[in-house]
Image (cartoon, protein in one colour):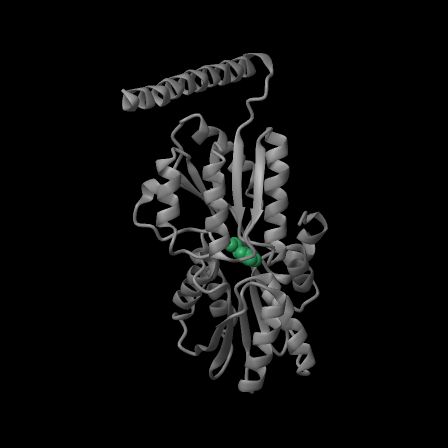
Amino acid sequence: MRNMRMSLAPRRAVAALAAVLLAGSVAACGNSDTGASGGGDDKIVLGFSQVGAESGWRTANTNSIKEAAAEAGIELKFDDAQQKQENQIKAIRNYIQQKVDVIGFSPVVESGWDTVLKEAKDAGIPVILTDRAVDSADKSLYKTFLGSDFVKEGRLSGEWLVENSKDATGDVNIVELQGTTGSAPANDRKKGFAEAIAADPKLKVIASQSGDFTRAGGKQVMEQFLKAHPKIDVLFAHNDDMGLGALEAITAAGKEPGKDITIITIDAVKDGMQALADGKFNFIAECSPLLGPQLMELAKKVHAGEEVPPRIETEETTFTQEQAKAALPDRKY
Ligand code: GYE
């Protein structure tokens, strides 16, 4: 008897709770229905996990995303992971818990995302990759990847060097400042560049190290390169910021950037373009950070359950010193 009474009471409580919850969810549905037809609050909520604030490119990218979200009427939850994968995983788990509508995400490194992406998938939350790729074999863990072709950027940089080293006699010694270790742009830019310069055996990479995509990193590693290698002919930096940091080290070592050492970088942010126009850099392969508007379009589409292409590539160009001078006055970032 006692047992029965005890088991009945909770059952009734559970039923009552279920009724309340059901009523609540019906009411919620009702609200969002009226919202769709009558101007209520049915905003799409996008949780975005950003890599960090390591470079001019990243700042422009963050601004583009924030502005585009406001323009598209999308509620943006934004987290800066300070270039740490564990912070990104934490942010994504928070978004899952908060039941956001869509998760957007620029992965700091390529590996190690399967578990958390699976959690998002199981929760029924679509994920959009922007800017950087993941190496997950299971492509169903995300809806699409919007961003640049980093291998191409590396290749275009290498091809320019091959073309402009034709008259050089003897070895051309190249040092390389890599981006963040394990990141898609560092892996791919290195690969594309190496493939292109293989066309000319006198082009030799004599040192290659990560400067973590930052000015401070670029300066510090370039100082080491200059100490260790008396003859450096070319610097290939995986982004403008590392190249800009390296400029300080080169000048401090009594060398003239752009003349004694040819400098090739990637991104084409304003400060990089200024250095190119000033003759301190020699060539930049562009990488566009203005991904916000396309990201918002994609967020709307995946939220509506529409099919989207699995890969969307950003359009970009390259700049010589003369082209930088012409483009600089209109450069927005
Ligand atoms: O080139 C660099 C930034 O992932 C394309 O990250 C991006 C890279 C960009 O820190 O400046």
